[in-house]
Amino acid sequence: MHAFLSYNRSDKGLARQLGGQLKLVGADVWFDGWQLKAGDSIPGKLNEALTAVDTLIVVWSLNAARSSWVRAELETAIARSIEDGTPTVIPVLLDHTDLPPLVRALKWIDLQDEDVGRAVNEIMGIPQKNEQARS
Image 1 (cartoon, rainbow, N blue to C red):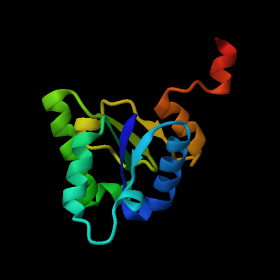
Image 2 (cartoon, rainbow, N blue to C red):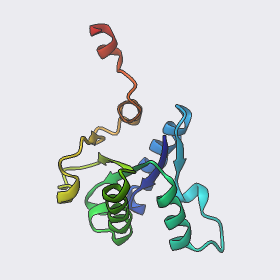
Image 3 (tube, rainbow, N blue to C red):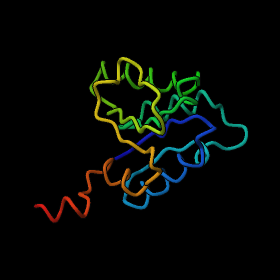
């Protein structure tokens, strides 16, 4: 998985944890705090990343819903997905804020309990212990 992590800066701590744990299980994560360097063109680097990834993970909250950056990243991913089938968009919900209409039908991950490990397992398709016991 080569994923772009989209979030509002108010949710940066949880987004960083999510990105870090995704990296630990083998995902290649584009996180602005890790990739952007002083003097970089922010729109240029975001555009490069959004055209290269196969997954957009949008950390969704009231903060994200009010963010023009998150909206632009999500719209870019949706447009590209319509054109060529990538990226996969995975909403990760931090609160009860409604998802935008174009992503409401997608399977989403509930992170309201802040269990980042469980969320990472769901994103990566790693079975939970209780699911393994039932198999």
